[in-house]
Length: 241
Picture 1: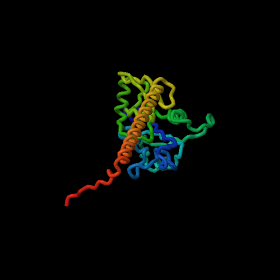
Picture 2: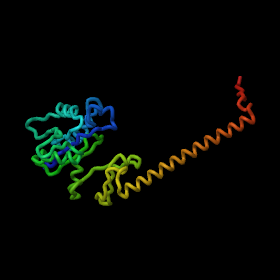
Picture 3: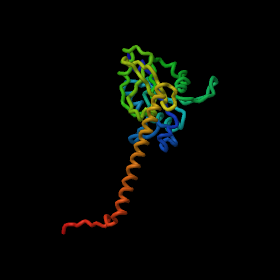
Picture 4: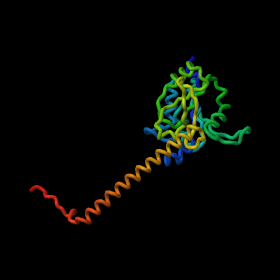
């Protein structure tokens, strides 16, 4: 079976994107321009197409006009093809008067539009990340492992950890724990991280005070030497003729 018939992709349209301000003052993060005429959302779409996945929904809500326009004007397929990149905008319905309350809720509310399409797997992607990936290999690993859910991750440095969701896995690559935000979590790992971070910050402050003390001490020694021998600053260099 073709991978396109097995998988349907859902690309998340992103939120406020305050860290990219002012680029996101009038558009969502996936609509931020990159490399000229392209947008960030083109990265996951390109990864899908190069992996043989040509059925995609893009979920949008915040500052979505620019993103909607880009998707509409860029991705047009033959009427004889099953391929599509469609916008699923946040909406109020008779069953719910709420807009998307987060990424998980966006997927949940959009399932009624996704379920009529024949697919064995749903691929959920961020619309504002830069990476290159073959999703066909990911699907192969998913089948071999017999997993219910497969998550693609990358290692990050400890200083970057608070900005990401952190998961732990065992020797069989099975996820054993997940923490969305180390700064706010009450879990043992989060507490241990905060203690470690506080200790390192205290050590950094201590080193800074030691450095300031040494600078002040050197300055005072220099002043004492000058008071005892003011002519020390009047020495002239004899330059070669």
